[in-house]
Length: 322
Image (cartoon, rainbow, N blue to C red; front, side, top):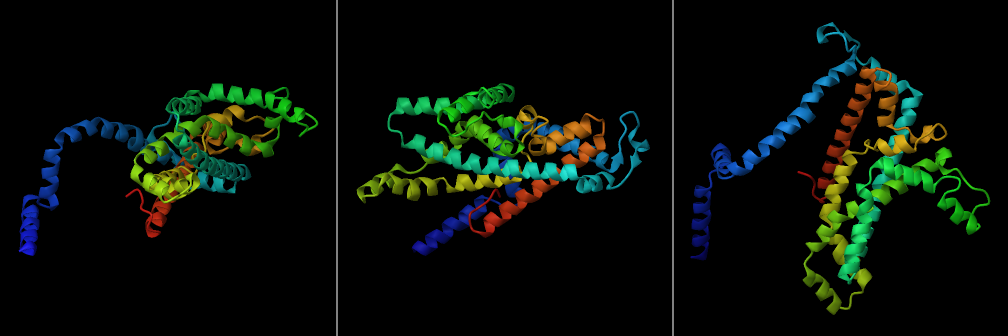
C-alpha cells in the first residue's frame, strides 16, 4: 500500500508539473515579477559587456579613428604576432602572472585566516570593532592607499626606522626603487587593503554552519584547533572552491591602479603588467589595434582558465559554478 501511495503521489506531481517548454513557460509565468526585475540588468550587461565585443575587430586592423569601418586596413594577426615576439610584452606577461598568483595565494590564505580568527572571538563588541577596522582600508581609493604605502616605504619611512632600530639593516633602503621587492610589496599592499572585505563572505559561510556540530565536538573533547580544522574549514569548502574558480578566471587581471601608482623607472621591469602596457604603448600612443589585441588575449586566456578550473573541480568531485 505504501508503495502504491508513493507511486500515485509521484504520478500526480509529474502531471501537475509539466516539463519541457510548457514547464518553462509555466515557471516564467509564476516568476514574472522576478523576470521583469532582471530586464534592466540584462540590458546593462548587453550594452556594456556584449556590445563592445564588436570592437575586437580592431585587433585585426591597422585601425585609424578618422576612417570609416569599411575603409580600415585589415592586417590579420599582425598585432598578435608582434605581442608574442616582443620581449617587453613577454616580460609584462610574466609580471602579470606573478602578481596575480601572489595576490591569489595571499588573498585566500589571509582572508580565510582572518575570518576564522574573528569567528573565534567571544566578545561581540571587540569582534565588531576588529571586523570594522579590518575592512575600512577597502574603502580607500588606491590614490590614497598608494600614498600611504609610498610614505611607509620611503627612505625616512617608518619601516626603515623600525628595521634600523632593531639592527636588521644597516642603511635605509628605498624599497620602491628595487624591482625585485615590488611583487612582495604589491602583494602586501593588496592584502592590507582587501583582507577585511574578502573575509566577509567567509564569515557569512561560517555563520551557516550548524552550531550543534561545535557543541557535539566540545562534548567529545575536541580542542579549538580541532574544531577549526574539522568543522569550520570543511564548512567553508564550497564557498572556497567557488571563489577560487572565479579568481582563477581573473588570473590575468592583476590590477592597474596600484601598479601604475607605485611603479617608477627603477622598478618598471617588475611593476608593469598588461593593463599598464595597454595604457602606455596602446592607448597613449594611439595604437588602438595593439591595445585591443592585448585586451583580447587577456580575455580569451581568462575564459580558458575559468572553464578549465571549473571542469577540473567537477571531475575531482568538488562541485563548480554550473
